[in-house]
Amino acid sequence: MTTLEKALFSDNRASASVHEELDQIFGALADFKERNPLSFNFLCANSGDLTLGDAIQALAQTLEVLEEG
Image 1 (cartoon, rainbow, N blue to C red):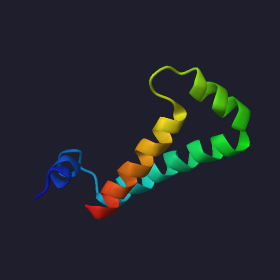
Image 2 (image 1 turned 30 degrees about the vertical axis):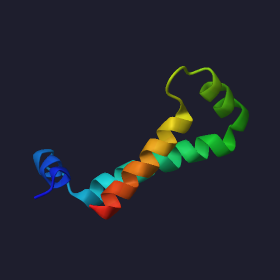
Image 3 (image 1 turned 90 degrees about the horizontal axis):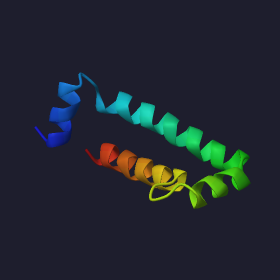
């Protein structure tokens, strides 16, 4: 059992349901970026070390891990 599988088991979650939930969050952030490009850019430029852009990238990478695992 992989570490991911152990974590999912401990959380009583299936990989597919976690993937679906994170994909919805990813979609919501991407939609926000598309509908509000100036606000998105302002927030990214003034958010300090982590931005909404970082969140989108992190979610994209996380979804890849779930797809591979």
